Length: 121
Image (cartoon, rainbow, N blue to C red; front, side, top):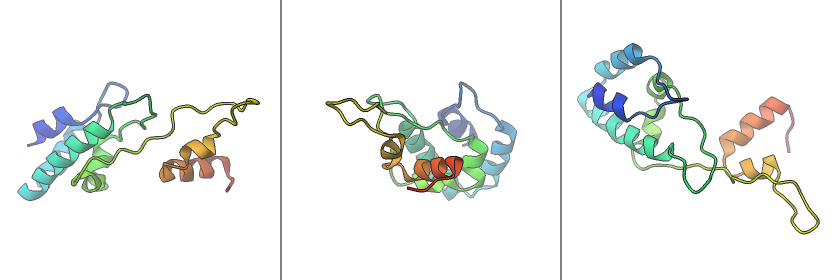
């Protein structure tokens, strides 16, 4: 079961880290949870693929995906959260899209941006 999970899980910057820790976590799961995990990782892998020129956040490290139970959010269906791809400067004919507007469709990204810059809209 673990080898299937590891082969499907998307890499981050071309590599995956924490294989031994991930194996230990997956081995302790029940058979039912392992089956759900395989479904979740397939959905997550699809959501991490670039598509339509949209910005896709990097995949999480696999150990965090497992230990913090983020995989449970991906069991039912792939939930693709994208941010508008073009953050543009305003021109006389086009108003442009600010970083805040682009992240408005991705609430987690907006919250992180607000923490980093220390401002609220």
